[in-house]
Image (cartoon, rainbow, N blue to C red; front, side, top):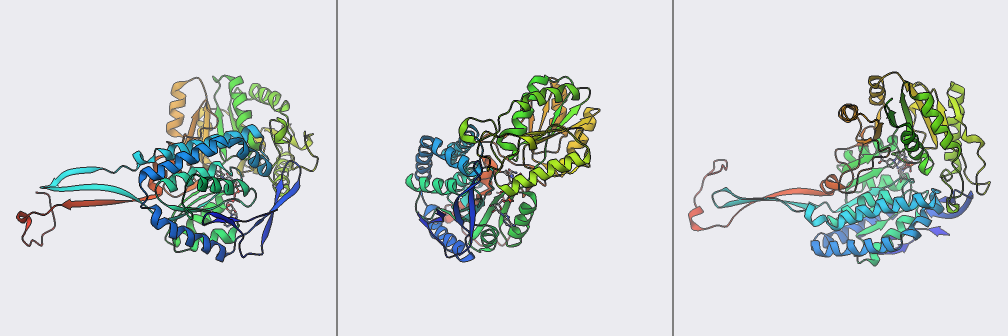
Length: 495
Ligand code: NAD
């Protein structure tokens, strides 16, 4: 099967000869090949979007909302189908894929009510018989570039908001799991979105570069690893575009001595190994403030040993990694951790999966006595590897978290409200959980990290999303009557 693009309301093939393989990670089998768009293919999509944007910006708020409501109904009714597609190409277990769809639906629902967020402000009589008001208008064509790990949720962080604000979109999903984005585009069309308002081009760096350089593209929302996010931000802004580029993460969960250790252990396992650790909000470092480490590690190990790794369609807890190359990379990190002297309390390299032996398997791995100089601590592994770092005090814990170049998410587990409040104030991270291990904000708040986890000023969805996909205009108006006549070259002031 060959997977192409969705341009101007229909599935199309491109001109490029280049292709990438798409796999079912639980069987290791190649299930399709995806076209990798050429610069000319991207241009066709952007031109379609530019044509559509001219009419869509003038569509009434009521009409735009009606399309979003209809789209919400379609996605909701077909959420199981979407989850199956995610599992078939990404590998995450079905229940987790269904959770991803649910979080995406929440952004669509937020976008259904966007007319209220687009309301401007009005000041009557800023000067005698002069009124002033602000309006927010769409940008035109915007690009969304998404990563493999949330093939539905991440596109839905941006696309519904961009469209509801009156923009036309070119979405470039990850070439590793391209099918879900095409379904979303088809369903949006079925919901009444005019042709060309949402286009999907599949591709790799060449397609990304073409979007970053295209003069009709006004803004770029990117999500992916930190080096590519930095590159996209620098190149996109140099080309004069508005860019928000969300990058990688290394999220710490601090456990204070007064915490409920069973709750903390449950949370660490859920957040460390859900989606095989392939989440930007996964907990990859557990900071145990002494004397809790021994008791906590024992509780976590007990739980990790009971996790069932296998095919996501068989009711297992944890699925495979996304590709053979990624599995090899994560495996190499586990080797490096052992070589550096960390203690592999549970070693995922020995896993016996409930699935095809050719799948990209690596079991959950728990390391104790990890130190900040080890590569398993410094690098974003993006796999089922949880590292426990032992520290002597709360201050040492905060210092460790704040020394990280990343600042996406963090959590603190404690029963001490004062300590939790101090942490939320002192920690240099964009999203903080207090006894909540994966603090992904709801759609009406904004999602985004600090430091090397986000380049740009505005976060995804919520108020920031609306600001990102619109630009403000201020109108000052006076309805003339003869009394207003006369020449005056002075600077206008209120009278
Ligand atoms: P990636 O950086 O490899 O790819 C992301 C996107 O960039 C894809 O569409 C890909 O085709 C494109 N791309 C890849 N190489 C490129 C290049 N050299 N030039 C231009 N574009 C290129 O990321 P991934 O492996 O797909 O996703 C995992 C990463 O995404 C992790 O680092 C994870 O933390 C991060 N992520 C971050 C968030 C967040 O909100 N901060 C959310 C999800 C994922």
